[in-house]
Length: 356
Ligand code: SF4
Ligand code: SF4
Image 1 (tube, helix red, strand yellow):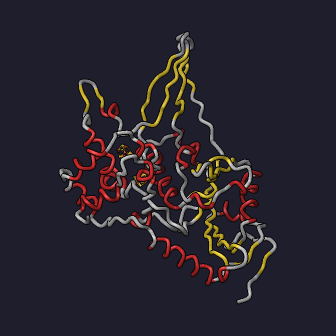
Image 2 (tube, helix red, strand yellow):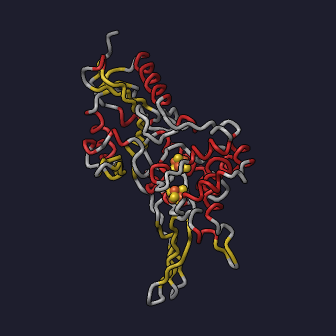
Image 3 (cartoon, helix red, strand yellow):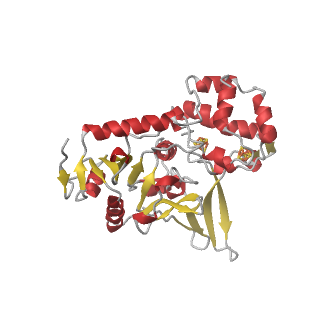
């Protein structure tokens, strides 16, 4: 079918070549955004500011670490208190970050954190300042990582909401020719970014190729977890002997929680300078896997490692459903990658529910 080749898109879906990535990154930078993307550094996919799209690595899938620190940094000062004047000072600045190449699972993780920080009666102004203007250029996954199980969790490998631009690698026509990417516009901001780019109008066949590639990716995921009735089965499996078996291998290092894109717990503490003039109240990430997390006056409510491991996994595969109505595991697989004991949350879920 002949295609309409356009010199400058008017903000609609199109098939584009890789050269367009640079135009998108430049377009964002010209609008004042610092653009983060996955860069391959010594074999690890790191989200860092891009100079241009040439640094971006398509093969990094979700990245070794999630981009969570862009909207929820590991350390931050909440306010300062001047002991001499008695004044409190809060410095909340809206950031202008954009993410180029975020994957569907990490968008779902971001939406989960939106619920945590902005979804209730009390909203977190620090989080909101980083979230309010955050363009997302999402790449659908056409190749699953070894530990991905997003299709089980319903968070990938494709996305159909909450993106500004959505890019899917369509491969090369007949296995030859130049690379082709389907560029879909999901917001007026995305439409503005797409305006003027060079591409061809997308046709039905392009959406069919996308659909097929996503189906193949989902089918290729080696890890699976049946989530049907999972919260109830996890609840009933609280005393399953597998918890002891898996705990005996666990080092309690908390790697799993520190790389998880949906973990949001924090410790709040005060720091006073030597002159005793100024006190800063700070927030830093903390995790239920740390023994001190459960320390309260007079004792510790999760002193045993088995209780901490079970809390982490039950929260992801059970409690989150009761709290928020969806799982706080998005199947990114990072906790499996980073676990020095080869502990696998999906495998644990399968055993507890009786599938393994
Ligand atoms: S629990 Fe593991 S697989 Fe699930 S979202 Fe967190 S890091 Fe990813
Ligand atoms: S990464 Fe593995 S060994 Fe470390 S605390 Fe988590 S489950 Fe235990």
